[in-house]
Length: 319
Image (cartoon, rainbow, N blue to C red; front, side):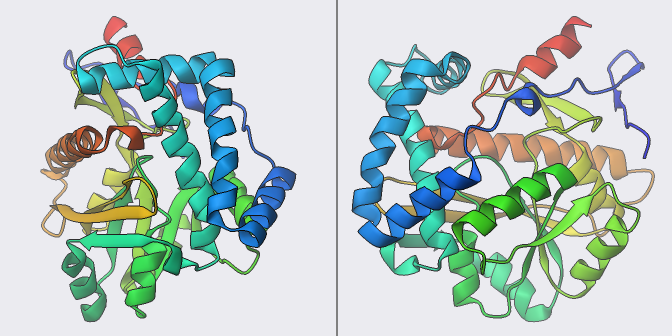
């Protein structure tokens, strides 16, 4: 596949700058995940959460780039510089959702108070056997959707992601619970679109995280928390090409054992044509960014992009 380019206001197409987050090393490994899983399942969630305090302190003291990103983001949300306690709370929220993934993947839904808003959007589509795109972001937990799936037996979710990300996800799943299978459609293969269409035609929900650009994917610059940020166009291009509806899914961690899951209809590309497809995609991205900003302000410690989220747009504007 050839790299896509993003149209600029002056008529010149420019490729999307490679995202800063792709260069960051993974801080976890399989041995640590297995150890954390063993501790958490044997000693219980309360005992496992004790480790989270140390994890948050570590990031606060020894991860300067993540600390700068957290400070920049929280300052945009609060309209003032955040305190050290607020930075700590941000890192703790991130660690808590990662830790809770252990229990969610092992189907310990009884440990959580999960409240679902707008579930009828999904259940109605599942009942009719209609395939739909489920768009998320690195905000809160996407894993809590398993709880919704348990309440809706006919619901099947496949994840669409780049092959390297798929490899990491599969390795993490194997470390946490080898029996927790994830239906993943890797992008970049010859049969990727064929497999994707088959899942949708079979009535599956296809999940995508649409807030980070990867590799040569083009980006659409839109306003987000007071500045221009680049959101990848690829997920929306795929949804428009396949003429499918798009539903936003956000699983917010609200502290303790509570999660709030929100479903919202974002776009429906059923009537998209070659002539209006580009405009429809840009409108959908703008709505997506606006709703992410809404939820970021509603639950500010749920934003888990610990890098300069606005840097790609800054480079592009400078160019």
